Structure formats: structure tokens, C-alpha cells
Amino acid sequence: MSVIYILLTLLIFSVLVVVHEAGHFAVAKLNGIYVEEFSVGMGPLIFSKTIGDTMYSIRALPLGGFCRMMGEDEDSSDSRSFNNKSVLARIAVVFTGPLMNFIFAFIAVFIVAATAQSVIEPIVGEVIKDSNAINQGLEEGDRIVKVNNQSINTYQDLYFALYDAGGSDLDVVVERDGQKVSLTITPVYNEEQQEYIIGFRPEVKTGLFADKVEGYDSVTFIDTVKESVYTLVYYVKSVVVGFVRLFTLRLSPEEVAGPIGIVQVVGDTVETGMSYSIWSVVKSLLTLSALLSVNLGVINLFPIPAMDGGRLVFLFIEGLRGKPFDREKEGMVHFIGFVLLILFMFLVASNDVFRIFSGR
Image 1 (cartoon, helix red, strand yellow):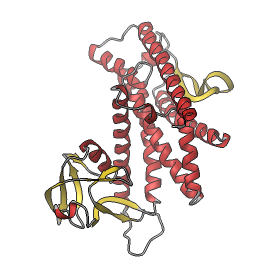
Image 2 (cartoon, helix red, strand yellow):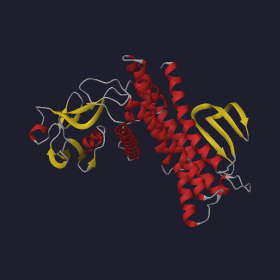
Image 3 (cartoon, one colour):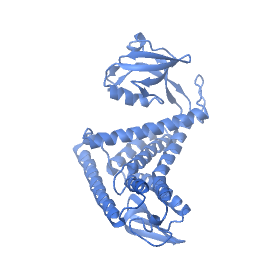
Image 4 (cartoon, rainbow, N blue to C red):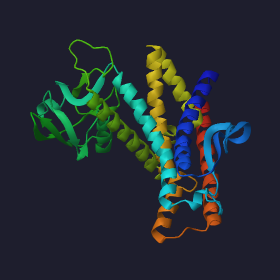
């Protein structure tokens, strides 16, 4: 495992952590909350510098970070204390961390989409002659808008719909000449791709800022924004579905990757991209960073103690009941959640090591 790939992975993690914690930090400062420490990394202190009344630090374990605020887990009489601010102010502080991860992911996805040589849309460019689709009414120019009542906004959305269908007949709605047309199409299994396909080649356009290619239309700015938003939604759905499968024990160990597994993914991404160009590597890493950023944002919004979602649950309940929980008891709940989270990360890392040495 190359040291360069490890350092590159740590750099990506560090950027995502800084983006996340900067969200908490900025809104805390705007609300007059005393931020005691802004840290990149966890564990033993390596470097620190105090600017104003906040200590900025780098710690030994680079797979995390924090924005420690006065009175976050204990009572404090100081007016600058986190828990002495209004419920809405505290919700804003907690929520902005994950929000910044989604904003970062959108920017990364937009850059990739706008500079892509090919943007694939859920529009039928050509129906495959030997497929069922050609005999079941699918026509060139059809825009697929729904499959089994699932909205199709990007070509990637088709993967979800086809995965859920498992080879059964598809209720497909297409937009044709301004009209909605309903079709029933039987997918076929593609041995080469090892997945079910509808049976068409999609329409391809060039990105907004990509070199123009004769015979291909360019995607407009508005369409690029829409594509980026829909791709972000697709990533969120992928993460949520993945975690639902994980917690319902429907996800195999081979499908779970922790920090060590991500180093492998980064290495594979760089090596594949280098066969094309440096810019291909940058775009591939931007795409991977966007997906990891969405992972971080979604996971933090899960109602798990010690995560932002767990804190939001306590804040919403406090807002409804009109009084706060016992700070020490809430702090203990978050501490237990943090311990369990560390244990989970250890198990995932162990799974990475086992997969590497078993050759899976």
C-alpha cells in the first residue's frame, strides 16, 4: 500500500473534516458562542496556536476532528456558553456541519459535470436491436422519467430502479413529444456487466466547460446545476440504502470499506486515472471526495449519540418540552455513543485488514 496513497487519503479526510467543523465553527461564532478549540484530528496534541480566544490544533489521529464549544456537554453560567443560547441557535450550529459537507459535495460534483467530456442522460439515444425494449415500445428520443414509480432524474437513478426490480417486468414512464407514455419492459441480464439492463444506449452530451465535440450538444448551465443536484440526491440515497442494508445485516463484509479500504480505493482511482491524464485523476478524486463528503454528512445526521444527529434529537425534544435534559446525563449518553462508534470503526478497520490478507 503506497505511502503516497495513504497521505492522499489523509489529505482528503482532513479537507472533509475541516469543511464539516468549519460549518459548526462559523455559525457558533455568529451566535456569540465561545469556541475553545478547533481541531483537525483526534488524540494527542501535535501542534496548536491560539488566535483570539480559540485554540487551533492538529492532533495525532487524522481520521476526525472537532469544534469544542464552552458548555456543550455541561452546565455553564457564561453567556457565551453553547447551552445558554436558544434552541434554534444550537440547532443551526449542529446542523451546519453536515450541511457544509453537502455543499462541498455539490461544488465537487458540479466541477466534474461541467468539465466532463461526456454527460450521460436518461434519454434513449438508440434502442438495442436484440433487446426486449425494441418490441415493447421504447423509441429513440424517449426520456425515461419513472421506473416502477421511482423518479428517474439521472442515468444513475436507473441503477437503483433496476436493482430493486431484480429482473421482473418494469413499469416505465417516458416523455415523448411532450406527452407521458406508459410502457411495460422486461429487462435482460447482461453477462458482461453482470447486471440487468433495459436495452438502450443513452444520449450523451458534452459538459458545459468541456471541449466541444462535433455532433454532440453541450449541457446548459441550468442542466448542469440540475445534474449536480440530482447526482447529490443519488449519493445520499446510496449512503442511506447502504446503511439500512448494513444495520439489517443484508450487506456482506466485502461491501463494507473503512479507512484502510478507502486507501485502496484512492490508489485504484489514481492508477486508473493516470492511464488517461492528470486531470482525469483530479476529477476522479473529486468524485470520490464528493461521495465521502456525502457519507460524512449523512452519517452525522443519523440519530446516533455523539453524532450531530443524536444532538439534534435532544435539541428537538428540548424545544418541544420547553426545558433541557440533565446536561451530565446527556453528556454520558453521547460519551457511550462515542465509545460504541470507536468500536464500530475498529471492527470496520479489522474487516479491511482481513479482506486485504484474504485477497478478497
